[in-house]
Length: 287
Image (cartoon, rainbow, N blue to C red; front, side, top):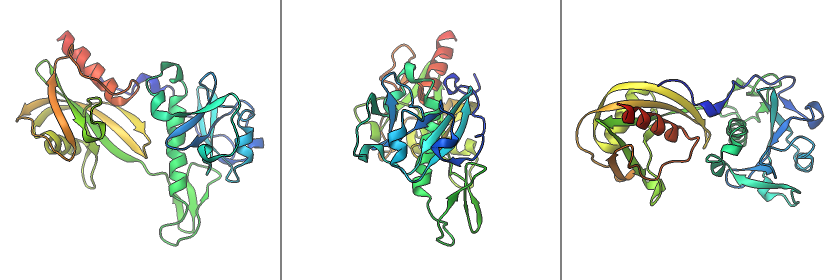
């Protein structure tokens, strides 16, 4: 029960040509990621990302240019930088802005999701990282790699490691409802890795802090980028080793042991939480 989740698809190949490019440098079939509003992306009527030609009106209104983010399965992708599609003053014939989170349960959009998440991470980082933190000088995009360059060298996109774990006790799985999902779905225990911690230590600490139990037999299952804004989720399974559930009130409003055939509302498909829950529950039902 190891490895990455199938929907992530093939590895992204590095960009070809200049990374920070103009529209004329991109192939006509390159898909353009146009973001705007609150975590939204522009899609065509058939749920695809627009080509350079289809996104021409947006591209013409942005002076920041395009960022080549690589190729997946032979398809090239680029992000329109420093541009808020929701704030634009023109219409999008045959296109609409769609919430990125809304796409996660949509199997039809699965082929585009890896590029959408990768692009949003870089788009957000670009907006937040305009100046060198040491000198205050403006940073510029490298022409050779996905990084910015300043007087003190290269600055690379931030990636924040976070852990998420499915805990089992006999034939049950522990699921919790976050204060952020009040009245909504149940998910797994998760949290960011702190300075000086290994990811294994972070799992034990988060479980102890949020639900007050001890775990054993920690096993790595897979990973998923989650660019809200810059997390890399590292997924694990573990077995309950002792203790009673004691909630951290600032983090959780509920946590319970569930049987695999009596699960509550769960996170959206294509999220790592849903993938781990499905794997672990399938294993529990076979045992």
